[in-house]
Length: 118
Length: 226
Image 1: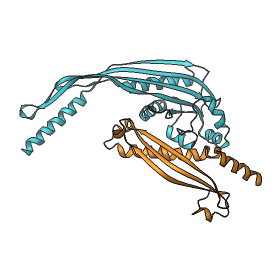
Image 2: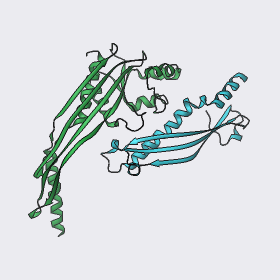
Image 3: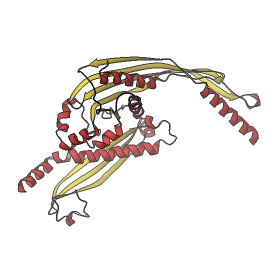
Image 4: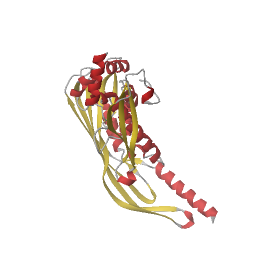
């Protein structure tokens, strides 16, 4: 995988993935009266072909949580709690892209067509 | 006035230090149960990883408990890989979204050549999935503290609370792709703090008791000694 500045700049690649954040929500235990710091990151994942045509735009909601009980000995629990919940959410997005994105019907079709043409 | 306030603060600190030095162990009752579904044994180059179940909505096992079991086992006969090292090495297959819930999910991920290579390189033979929690189930009593004459602090009253730990460990042989058994650890204990001038806490270390009992049993189970 190679990072490119824009879909138009991708002349020598098979496709371009453009993730963008469309929404971001957090909650802390004091707000929800639960035990958890929670993070939701809503992405829009766009896949372009080598010609710059949009193959699919797929919404992905990544979720992460951390239990406040795991920071009970700390005076400031909010900072490490939110940090860890955010890291879990980012990993969740990475896990989806790595293992599940290829199962999205449009992506699956595009990959099959691409494999057949090469 | 400032000197007197400092003296009172010092007295309160001394009382707190005295109380913590006097902290005694309350009574903990632990029950261990084991179900064996297959023979186990471990070779010199095999290792074990203890993983917390984080997939379920709502409750999730405490990270400290998983580290406690892992640390307890690490001091014994088994080679232990930490949860973080394992999950990082096998990213993205053991994230909350993607981790296998049943052994029937294993063949699909073992088929990935990259997964198989990474698993082989870290040498993990057994995955132990730990689930459960520790809860306060009862509490009663009251205590009041005051600064008596000459700036000496004094507390009077009686506090008590009961904690209940309930954990279950599922043991998977990842090489065979099967579950080889389950070990559960339940612990209950009552802590209390009587106070006549100085509070004297008797703390029941319930979660710690559940952790050490579970770790001891897991060691025997995986080694094939139980």
